[in-house]
Amino acid sequence: MIIGVVMALMAVLSYYSKTQENPLTGEKQQVSLSPPEEVAMGLQSAPQMAAEYGGLYPDNAIQLKAQSVGNKVLDEFNKYVLQNGHANPYRFEFHVLRDPETINAFALPGGQVFITAGLLSKLKSEDQLAGVLGHEIGHVVYRHSSEQMAKTEFYQGLAGAATAAAGDMNTAQIANYVAQVKLMKFGRDDELESDEFGIKFMIKAGYDPNAMIEVMEILAAAGGGADRDEFMSTHPSPANRIQKIKEHIEKYSKEMD
Image (cartoon, rainbow, N blue to C red; front, side):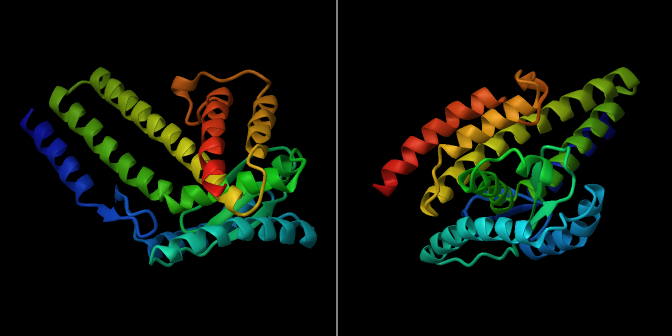
């Protein structure tokens, strides 16, 4: 029991020792990496990640289109942070992956953003692409990957402490389950935060934010047309995200008037 308490205390102290202020949002966060370390990790991981999806899509025009749309949204964010006395420390690059079957888009720490050919083929407009890429930029800006790393270490530490305190495998399994559920909740919050970011800056870039509703409908259809069990999903259900997106569209559209 004493060993378990000590381990739990160490996990808590380690977690809160990782507190940093996000240079772009001003938010206090527990993160495992500094912005330069995030950039380095993303650049190092990008080739391997691309290889897992069959490499980059071999049409340079398609790559340039994704880069153009992504940079248009990114430029609006960079203007915004400069007006608030900050500079963007991240190195953003936008890539289309060869994989024609997987419906996905994701961002690595530091600014490497990817969209699969499978998802791109489902999109019908530049506005929809701007929404997807803006969402992924949001994950980088809010440092979600680095936050998740810190949280993973924290909950693994607590699960280990519970195991040491109880001394039986059943308790260890329950503790690990609780840790996983906590991380899934954070994941859903991250997605909603990135949705809001994408809406705000695609509007500033001159894109139609209603395209994000269309993207959610595309994702729902790609998943078989039925919402997944939200409680055990790292992403909110498309229906729930659509309602939040409508609220963000109303809010930020008024700001632009």
